[in-house]
Image 1 (cartoon, helix red, strand yellow):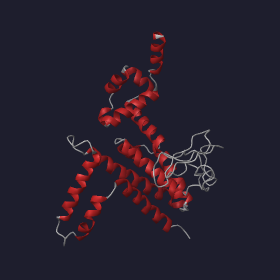
Image 2: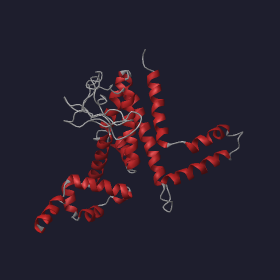
Image 3: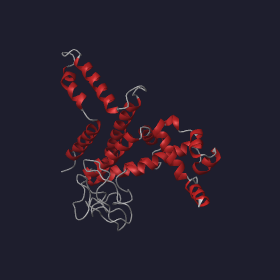
Image 4: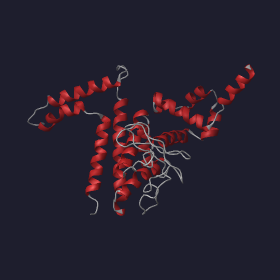
Length: 300
């Protein structure tokens, strides 16, 4: 029995690309970019550098794989579904399914404002929890209404925002891949996820790239700003990050109110609003402003 237990433990500890990527994400989450080193990986995985490189090639490839894994989990529906370029929604119009002939699940990860995650292949529709919209399908479970393009855009945006909030290293890697490697796995997936519902909103074909780029850059800019703010918290700060944030906003608000009211009347008017704002709600408000502009500019 002891021998079988040891053999079972060894099988569970077999080194694989998936296990290396998972460990890399854990290291990045715990200590940021500087924590992802070959030495840290070998110590955590109880293996040698050669075994790691056999599975991932190099550390840059490992960082990309970690980013791709987090983004794949964050996006709320599979980009393989839906119509082709120039077509209206395809599967989305028909109540977008989780795959060919498969219904997406309802519900989601609990995100508000119409978010929801994609249905997995082979899973039939399930009723969503109260307050949660249907998953990609936008069939809201059994017979519910399909999700509007605006809601699908919010779901993508909030999925990326929440992922970057959970993984503080993610925003800078997303921005770097967008600038340096737009042909990689991450940028096309984000553009496809944002672009399809924008197309379904009736954006003229000639404006698809510009409109989608505007949304993507807003999302990445907002997530990068929040990630940087989190990294700037001093090392001796109290563990309650909400307390740290409240203290910071109170200091900033008081500083704005102390400015000359004749020179800075507007800042005086919004100082209290700045102190009371909530980052995620503000982020979503920005998405809604962009969508309002898109809707207003559509050809009538």
